[in-house]
Image 1 (tube, helix red, strand yellow):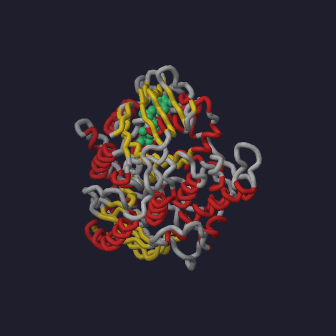
Image 2 (cartoon, helix red, strand yellow; image 1 turned 180 degrees about the vertical axis):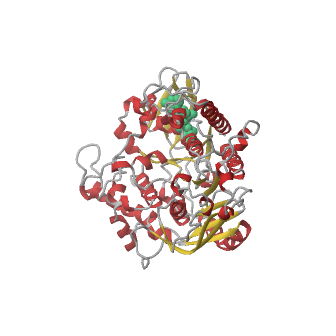
Image 3 (cartoon, protein in one colour; image 1 turned 60 degrees about the vertical axis):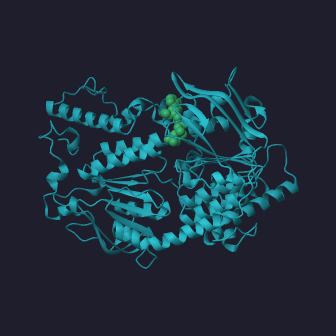
Length: 586
Ligand SMILES: Nc1ncnc2c1ncn2[C@@H]1O[C@H](COP(=O)(O)OP(=O)(O)OP(=O)(O)O)[C@@H](O)[C@H]1O
């Protein structure tokens, strides 16, 4: 029998009564989750080790609307993972209710009924090797051809009612249930703007489209409680509103109940009634207004220090430097689908750009044309023309291009190899040549044209030290200017750590250092602050504004959040907007 989803098909569904409602008649039904005065530890740590969270008291009642808020992704994600059983609660919430009293009568397995969809970057990639994130730009490989529709329903062919793989006669009830599910799927995908993408390969979906698709998939798996970690990150303004109203309506009918993880800078939806604020190993829980009041003092101090550090000493932005990138009538087409249409854009030395556009508007595609990763970067002919660093695209080799462009992006962060025994220093050192494997004397790379001279090696060593001092741990702790190339002991120790052992936020800081270390002519920063905590973001913004990129370097920031761009109009920031395939300066 098909559970949940009542509100979608009110008229026809008296027989499909929600599993949630049927089961909630038990004694514990009014409480969704409970932790009373426990510490939370990593598995393998004893009770005398430092807990991840201390003295947690958290009760979520049926009908309350909760969000978990954290400044960096780590602790917030750890709290949500605790609810999925990935961390140990000591003492554990006692039976019969346990952690999830609402699942206790009759007993249901939380493993099957509590789902977590996490969008925070994973610190580990599969197998530690580099995977080719540019695959989506070319001909799609056979194994990547699975569409969103197939990924939810497998081989099931709704039009013919029968499963493709084998013949099995379904009962009228089963057929009706499948039709209900199909209706819900179509309703959800329509509401989230995915209808026209249902039969595209999943790999072709943009970042924001993929996030929405993953949420649909999780809802279709019919959990009773859905934990969504950072569902708004990477979504454009309109998609955020639509998603939030869909989530509100699902939560209000408990189909499923939803607890959202939000970054501190995310707007808190008005319908959220309660907050769990995760900070420095402690969790402050309660009614939204009370939690926000307690937090307000700290926040005010933080804003004051941010404003004061951002308003001084900005590097002068040069407005009329040499062109670094020239796009004339650039097009990108997949079959009959035109993703970019006649793009004209010149990026000059010293300029700061904010590249804007809704999910799926083509920002990543445009960047991949500029980085040369997109096969269609070679095929701009006739009226269409692409010039990179004063040369036509075919006249500049991809490795050379990689050494001239420093890039940070969610795709790169996911794809970068996480091999054991690769130090932070070595990862930063791969930035000089735009490589993915460390090498060369002192871990500074091997260069592209013969052996590096001692002077160049020394310059590279100094540069690594400089970015480490500007963006490393001592800068996170400091509120002032970066340390002008003087590495502290903390930075030194950080440089020796294994990259793979760092938190996702720390890894992203290191990848930012990697993008900046070679002082490339062009820096592309796509969702640059992802996963970083407040202190890292503050240090990063300060560094970028105070000389971390020079007046001879061009920078493009890609973000759905204006406030994430370190520069503003007063600094000469320019905006280029993509809309339905076309682009213009706004
Ligand atoms: N191989 C492909 N075949 C068909 N369409 C594709 C293919 N690859 C990408 N697309 C489409 O191109 C459009 C642009 O994708 P892109 O990733 O550039 O968007 P974006 O602006 O970066 O979005 P987001 O803000 O979500 O990251 C999307 O609608 C996507 O579905």
